[in-house]
Picture 1 (tube, one colour):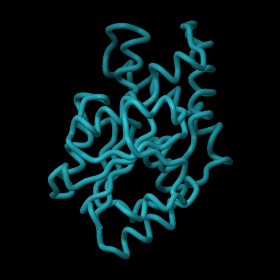
Picture 2: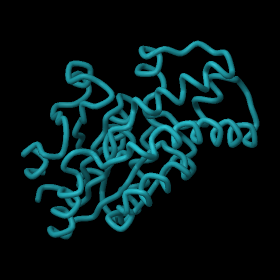
Picture 3: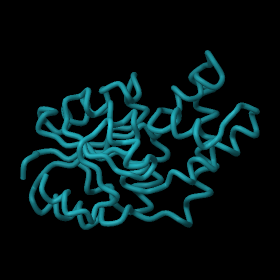
Picture 4: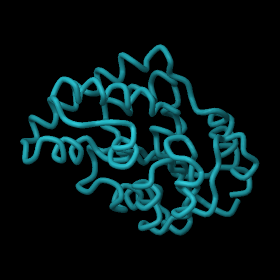
Length: 213
């Protein structure tokens, strides 16, 4: 295999769940009366940490307030998504393929710990990951490269030996800035929207491209 480490974003990559996050954010925006629509969500919210988003929405707020708002919003999301949750098409077979080939796997996500636990444990896929970095573990959210730099470091690899799977523009920029190879996933953005930021794009993990990496 060309790469020694494979790093996956979670929302929109491991699971195709953006419509449920959008629905939760819309309900949250109605409660707190701030503007939000599909275009704003796609352009501004995708790939960002809750801390960055709540500071954008509410201005300068405390860590306690960020935690409170985060728990409220993610409770909305989890209630919407629990009965609909499923892994992205082909990804379980791909995880098994990677493990058979003895490569290292990391999760690099802006999601809060409560959503990481919610997803990995309900799908019973935690054991696939050698390293997990979530939004609570970084000082700088995507598009800053910190999350993917930490993933590569945790795997004991140079970023240039790692490939990142990402669906958001912020995430693609983050992985690129970290020095990783990048594969775009056309879930939260269209292929045309992703094209300026990445050369290789897939819709799901049944694409033969993923077995050439």
